[in-house]
Image (cartoon, rainbow, N blue to C red; front, side, top):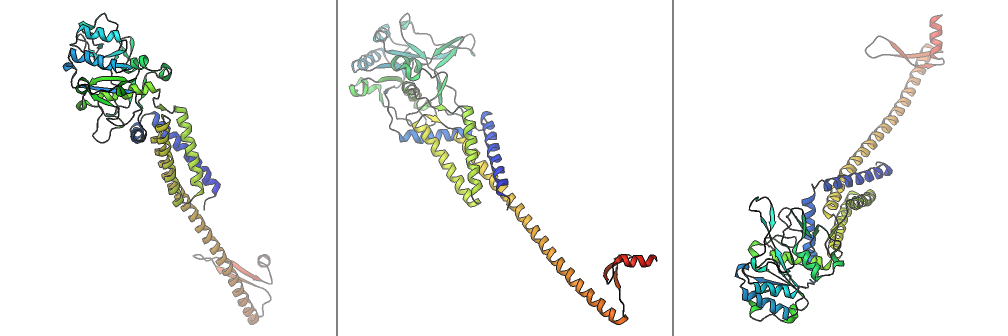
Length: 427
């Protein structure tokens, strides 16, 4: 077999090389889809394990244009009377009266969401939806309603601010978190952030407008809660990591998860690039040391064990520490290292077997050659003895013909040396 030290060095080099290649592919974005698959599944599984803790209530309306002025004012009064901490509309009611907006401004805890619309002069330029006439010149808090672009159709992220022209404006969720939450919880969150979803579609407590107007809402459902009011647009839902199969999440609930993430201060953090490289290198070296000490069958067990540890470790980190390890890259590196280890180890074993076979053949040939030489010497001694007895020769040299020629070469000399024969031939 190949020397243990030789294979040990090769396995370490292989582990480091695989880690560097996988890290490079990750930085180039070529493993993004693979990593996203693990992210979505692990986040979905762990979100269903945890008990959702939400201080939000969704109030679903059928259509914003059917939200009459009387209904809007009654909704504000009801929510205020039941002790709502804040009221967040993800739209601006366009048909409501001045009285409604004055009532909202007077409560000091109502926030409106303003959409971005293409500019009439240049459709490629977005501008903020203007206030309706009834709301102008009132001090109404607001934020931008914005959907962060998805990656391959899945919405995993949101952002704190949106750039409109030269201005950086807060999103609706950021404005609401600033008004109703602890700034210390999310002040370190800037730009895009990964949403810590509370669970699958329907997890956030919700109630329809008709039930509110019918008086079915009780104080325990509203007290100290932030009520997010928006359209019940299940047919326009978004796909998220916690959706299974053909499930979608309403945009209203998506906003609720983004807002809850800011309120809790728990955006999912991603391992920095240098740390990701260090983790890949550590896993590669540990795997190399383990593969070095086991047989191919044992290597399969080690590989399966390592994969389970990596996946479970990723699940624990994202589920309980809001931290994402590059599980996709780690699994890819471990799989590649295991496959290459099998190939290289098999090749080195084959080379070692070939070397052993050649060594054995050489030893056999050497033994047969020595035996043949011994037998040949005894035979010539017998011939010399018989010839000497016949012709009474005191000295004798035996020759053999060189194959394919007429030349002779000496084989054995008796009672003399080959040099004696040459000296006598000269004389």
